[in-house]
Length: 246
Image 1 (cartoon, rainbow, N blue to C red):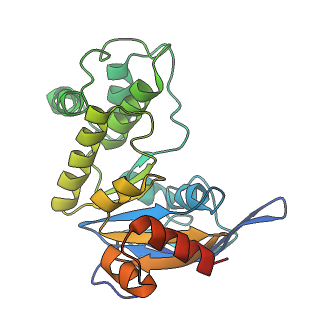
Image 2 (cartoon, rainbow, N blue to C red):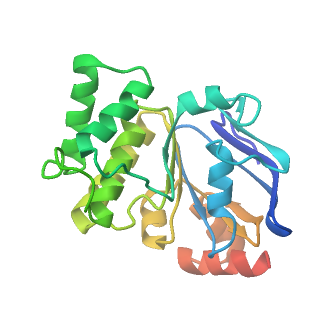
């Protein structure tokens, strides 16, 4: 498995929680200018892998790097380079949507008209005009996801990690997110996302990494995985890869 460039590298990642092995030798690369989908059944280790990559967890063994920087030894350097939509969206109930995104922008050194321009552009793209100046308390699941997406992208990171980015969004908002992901890819950014929606994976992914039982069961382009399994539907490719990794 060789690439000219790799913005994200996972090398032999292992992680256990109270004796339960969540990851066992997970390895893959996600190059820049591509969208990489991380898929697998519940409990396969997808969220644990993402948490290691965005520096919330430390692996028990193995190495994770973003843009060549180790997520443990060079944690702050990694944090400066990434935008993260975590599985826990975590909004402050008394802040408005705009205040949330502005706060995260300032954490990344932004301010003034440039920050406000970025916020306005994201709110337009994600159709957030109706909630821009509302407090987060009482937001629906979809509204919460939109705010979390906007704050993850306000500093225009080169590397983006999304955990279920369209979960809770309506059809129009989901389409807007997919269009935004394609634009980021075409601009040369690295996007790694988890999803249970195979239609979304098929629509977006240049590469797919299948996890099963905490291990890398398969990885490659959709065409490569189809050839390897002899299957044409990605759902069947996924099921075959998981069964082979059992």
